[in-house]
Amino acid sequence: MARSNDAPHERKPAMPGSSFGRSVEIEGMSKWFGDFQVLADINLTVKEGEKIVVCGPSGSGKSTMIRCINGLEPFQGGAVRVNGITLSQKSRVLDAVRRNVGMVFQQFNLFPHLTVLENCTLALRWVHKMPRKESEDLAKHYLARVRIPEQAGKYPRQLSGGQQQRVAIARSLCSRPKILLCDEPTSSLDPEMVKEVLETLADLANDGITIICVTHEMGFARRIADRIIFMDQGKIVEEAPPSVFFGNPSEARTKHFLEQIL
Ligand code: ADP
Ligand code: MG
Image (cartoon, rainbow, N blue to C red; front, top):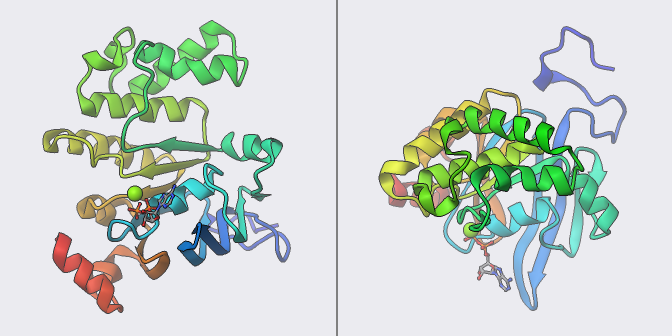
């Protein structure tokens, strides 16, 4: 076991090959859509509580990689462990992995015919079999956490885009995931609403949850990321803390990308 005075990020594995202290371990992951190789030998280890920002050009495989981590997409080569569970497409494994993983999408994916509160309690009641009162109390707690407690009785269409995305974040948090995966959570929002969603995520980043977030919001990346991953053509091309990533990237492709978006 790790000594009690070790900082969390310095903990050693309990035994060689164990996943102690590691949220996500991706080893040599490759994936094809037909003949097209979308992911090529992806290697990435994310420690518990780490905040990772993933960026890269459109079509570089960012969404596919994120979707593979919670089993929304199968992959053909390599291995992925999530909280120590080796991913496969078996429903028992997928259920176990997804219990630990929340996902926030670009399109908020709220149910339009359910209220904000019902959107948040749905999985708690039907997947986690939680009694109504308990599920509502938990949902209200997380709606307050994302600073929209007063919206609980409204329908998604009555909310702004930023508020809807905050509902989606609260809904993910209701299952108390250890890992939050975000795929461009602000890219379908009007500019004035981007900030409120990024503030919400930055606030959560202080809670110790592991976050892997695909985004091109580089101010946010600079602020919350422990590491920034740059992908191009299905590969991780560069991986560095923000100070190095922005100050002195080693790859020409990273420099070119940053010149385009900054
Ligand atoms: P990113 O999120 O970085 O923009 P994606 O992971 O969405 O990239 O896509 C990577 C590549 O895989 C793109 O070329 C895309 O067209 C292709 N792709 C994504 N999903 C599918 C699919 N379901 N079938 C075939 N090709 C796909
Ligand atoms: Mg994408």
